[in-house]
Image 1 (cartoon, rainbow, N blue to C red):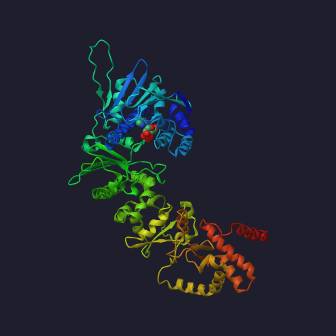
Image 2 (spheres, rainbow, N blue to C red; image 1 turned 180 degrees about the vertical axis):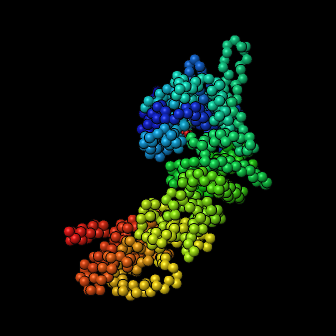
Image 3 (cartoon, rainbow, N blue to C red; image 1 turned 90 degrees about the horizontal axis):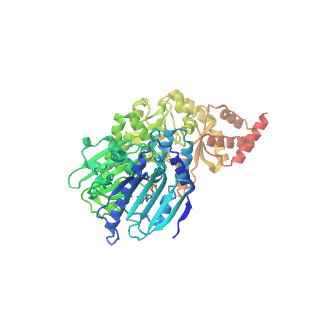
Length: 634
Ligand SMILES: Nc1ncnc2c1ncn2[C@@H]1O[C@H](COP(=O)(O)OP(=O)(O)OP(=O)(O)O)[C@@H](O)[C@H]1O
């Protein structure tokens, strides 16, 4: 097959440009990325051979070679792993499969500062491309295990790449970087220096479980014996080494390798389980939520090893879905090397392991909360919305999750509160924990449902994640205090036994009885009741749900998931202290023109819906009615 030239996919081209004009100051990491890919390729080959021992591949000496050629100014990273087929090279290297990448590029372009850009890059798999930070030409020769023919890929990073088949490619993948001239001022070191390579490998890739070898510099005339290559990494599994022997930096590099992140993790969690089912776990809480955390195909789970041998990525059986952001390694001593995902799902030991790991993660978050407020705040900001899913799905750990949960609240504009702190601040005669759900802090804070609470200084939790609509119902109460929506059921914030207030209410009820009954008839099926409100102080009216009914947001959520939900009839509440409502009652009693009154009633209802962020049933009619009224008032 002749050499063919292809264009990079648009996003890939943009990413390459970013790499070439590197937004990333630490260029040394290109080697970590290439070694990381090589190590993955060796893992994959070992597994493939385990599954099919007829596969035509040699796994006796799986390793990574790094070769330096000072004269040619090239650096070569070679593995004898799984390799890639011709088609795979085109798919994997010429394009960027990640669906969030287009969005990422946009954000990257918008990121004003270098730190912002570096942070964003870490969230996407741009590993191979990082070679272009240090090289002006990259060549890759690869042969897929079991195939005869190899493929040569080459590019100067300028929009195109070439592909050709080659006959004599060795097993695995060889990446050759044609290095740019060294420019230490811009962090572009001399990567033909063995000393530098040794240092980078030690720093970033020491834990890689395959040998990383470097051939010694050949000095002619030193005898005929081929000099022995030097192994640069210790290959020690970090999770098996005692805590005090491993530095934080070493843990962090392992995290970056398995978490595909360029940034340090927020927290490192170790667990050593002894006894009948022995295992070691090294888990990491990332510092940033990935873009696709809430998408259906988010790859969740940690890596599973059996007796130091890599078995699978994304082992979802080890942690529940609400901890899907946790990265790490679990190394079990007593599983079969052939273990499959299906077997893991049913294995009793794995279930016990999942329980223990879950508790360990939650208790680590609790420790973080107690000992390092800032770290905890970052964690909760990034992952709180996911963790709260556990309140619905994991009854066993519900209390542990509630103990580490925090929520925005009217108590403080910026600092969230825990439920425990809320309860401590509750007024003496307050029985329930109040909350409001909605789309944003601004929307819920301005909701009419909040008026009386604000007027009386009663704290309300402001819950704005979609999952909040669900867990509050499932959990129901905290320390015996009911969780109550301010937008549901009857709310009476007057002190119990306040005779004056009770008398006043009775009087109002009599006065408004006729209007309320008439309005209910006028508004027909749109609502199930019209009543006087004790939650409004400023607005004329609001709509509320019955205590057991779905909120409009939840109704929409179910519909979005394709479930049939009958429309919920809501309750219209009027503020008897508002001039408009008073005037309406007066006009009603005086027998004013019923059709004009009916329009006012309709408008009042529509205004109540708009005030909570909803849409009037017939927006154009609503606009028409308001315009007519305004016109008449001129
Ligand atoms: N040495 C290699 N051997 C076999 N396949 C490779 C090798 N290097 C890269 N690949 C393939 O190309 C894909 C893309 O590699 P790239 O480094 O761009 O991203 P990644 O490794 O998937 O993500 P990340 O950079 O986040 O680790 C890899 O997922 C792998 O399938």
